[in-house]
Image (cartoon, rainbow, N blue to C red):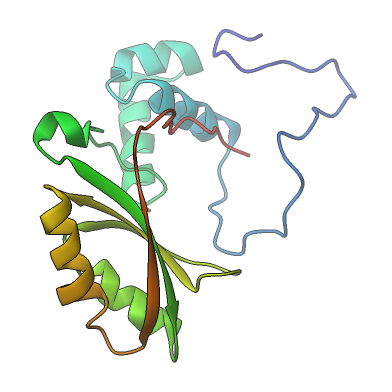
Length: 176
């Protein structure tokens, strides 16, 4: 392991992939190793100081500050406080699978505009879209389903997966 916590492979050997290779992401940002290391440090602790990061990567604080700002400006990273919805009075979380007809991208944009929905993905498989919602209670969830989601043109059906217990949630998947 290096000082930054990254594994170091012997010269000439390729590291084992973390997961099966995927098709190249045409929208992926081109990042150098320093930026990737900065991202990995921030994924572990988003409150890391520029001084601490600078020491780990061998740059000045000003250079790290500039790199982090460029990563934020280019939407490669967001630095936010991740909260526990239950602790903030939101007793109901759920994933909702949505089957639809018509333009799924347009429907995804309409769903993304709903404040209670915090996650929207276009999918392949049994559902055309999956959304994650955070609600005050079951009544709030029911109202969201009936009055907002199912009321949208193009929604054929929904299937709701209510969270009983969150076992794992992490944001430190690293970089490539």
